Amino acid sequence: MTAHLPGIDVVALGEVMLRFDPGEGRIRTARSFQVWEGGGEYNVVRGLRRCFGLRTAVVTALADNAVGRLVEDLILQGGVDTTLIRWVPGDGIGRAVRNGLNFVERGFGIRGALGVSDRANTAVSQLRRGDIDWDAVFAVGPRWFHTGGIFAGLSDTTVEVAEEAMTAARRHGVTVSYDPNYRPSLWDGRGGADRAREVDLRIARHADVVVGALGLAGRRPGTTRIAADEVPEALAEVAALAPEAKVLATALREVPSAGVNDWSSAAWSARTGFVTGPELPGLHVLDRIGSGDGFAAGLIYGLLTGGEEGGLPTASGPTLSVEAPVLKRALAYGTAHGALTMTTPGDVSMASLAEVEALMAGVSAAVRR
Image (cartoon, rainbow, N blue to C red; front, side):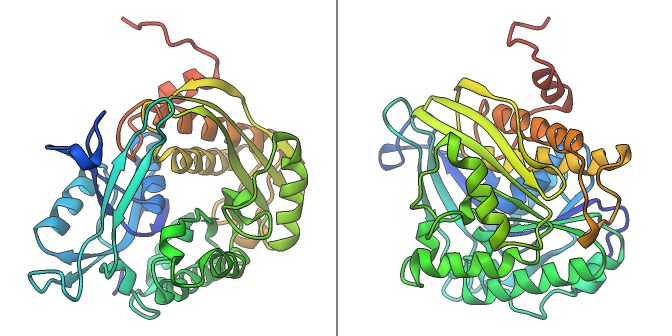
């Protein structure tokens, strides 16, 4: 597979699923669903395109049938370039290859959000090393590449593809980010949390920026609760585990209820040490799915545009160096964008750059006329 993508700023590698949303209802009693597109890595480039105005593309694979073309249509509506989609012939019933589905309840009050995915044997999970001409993708000049643990967790072959892509990106001087984004369902029967941690540590060594870095803290992903006063020490621990990473960043969330979250962020870099982001306590949440990806998009935007002020040079690759004001600004963009993503339904951001920057400036939620 070759690429012709002049002018693209950010490329992501990941699965794009069709999300079925019962609104305020329950999956098990629904009679109708609204559909969206979504996926941990894709949501990042979708936010970077629609909110922040960067030119983005997604590398993925879809079964070439009506469902796959619906997913493509939704991606096109989001403004993300589809040139790098690998289309795989379908067999009519999904015996050999299919497209991923994700049923999601938003949750309310004491009832938490619920995701029920239907994604085994998808086209993207069958990607193998050599299927994508990564040198062609990165030779045309994207500045940033993003992938994550959701894609890596789809199959044993996607681990190899993620590592192949990250290695090629760094070879071309492209800044690389990785989000561990642990999903227990992807690792059930395949080594569980221990295998996921092994993969994360293997892949994170190719990343300049680790988003969701607390996912690498503790002995096993998803089992260690880190209190606010423990975050600096935890990020220092991750820095030792991923010595090639120049920036470690994480959104921070406390969940008093499904509808009210305390939301903030923090980061570490070798140049700045520990840095904190804005705090948004008592944030009212409509739909929390995708908020971490919204944080990642804002962070990446802040780091990319911060380079114009001496923070992150274009195509920085392994020479990435970020000053404290640039990192704090990037955390502010990420925190605000992630927060606004939680105010609308679906995985993807519906926020505008003006709204993000207004929230960063402390503007209230009063009616605007």
